Length: 448
Image 1 (cartoon, helix red, strand yellow):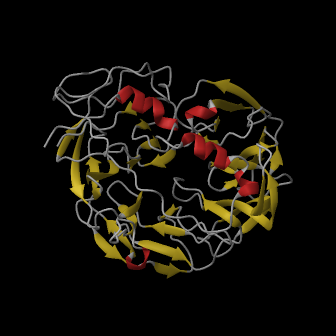
Image 2: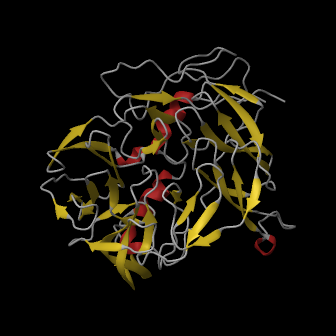
């Protein structure tokens, strides 16, 4: 079989913000809070790369064949590397033949050494589902099969250095070559050894989430959030018996143990008509209001809800405010009529006060996170077509300073530091020990 490599690796990295359906997504997301149709979210689409048994990383611009790359391009310790790397020469191996059926997927981190990518190995229209795993920070990669039927949809989460869980929906084909929904099956898998071995699991319902379990954002029903959490050692999944009473809500992932459960969503909804930017009117859409934050300090047995005085909207698949949570302070960030809003809580989410920070961000999607030193990072715009901008919060979020776009605004805490995945179709990653200085991790070079 021919060797496979990423054609135009620089261009692929540059597309970290840009899915192949970017313009469709941008239009669909415009004021998603006011135009989202009712219904639960579907499994995340399977993302994919090629296939192989052992892969090696090639630094950007390297056209050589078989040498091992470092964790990323050299960086100066006084700056953060560009979030969207400058396009460079392709890293294709000598004699490499591009395979248009091979699609990259998101890089996920268990810690600073254990990295994972899910992918499809496609032969024509038939695709086997596999997993790429690295135990050395992306310097080398191994390939493992996933015990699922070909063409399955797999929603993957990494919940510990070697613990992974996957929600699977099989996609059997009918005689016409389409998906036979009647024969489709849904089940869950877990791995405690870095994806080498997998087992089917049943979700256990609990009254409270143990402090050591990691929340996983899956069950985001429109009429209340069912919180799922996973054991960071075994991958076993539990479901909180009591729903969070917010519409179209999401739970904040990647928080350090002991931070509690944090969810953001809406208190009200109605069905109505909305005028789109092109002048057309959409009928029968769900219109949300009452931007709210719910927190729990006892594993979800009880919840404290705060409703913001404005309908703060962060866009994306859910819309409600983006949360940045630390030990002593938390922020809720979004836009109102195109102007950025920053709310701060100094009492662990019980009450919120609007800061004086302002910036024009339009209808860009918004992400926010806190660095370990307490600095608020805000990124407005996730897709390249949105022309992303980034801000640092000054004076505890009272002022904003625009800074070069870099990793950090969607970073999650992992053992030993912080990690940030690329967005949408990107399979690059960024890692940091302190949340300030980052290194860039290339996607693996793929060989068959």
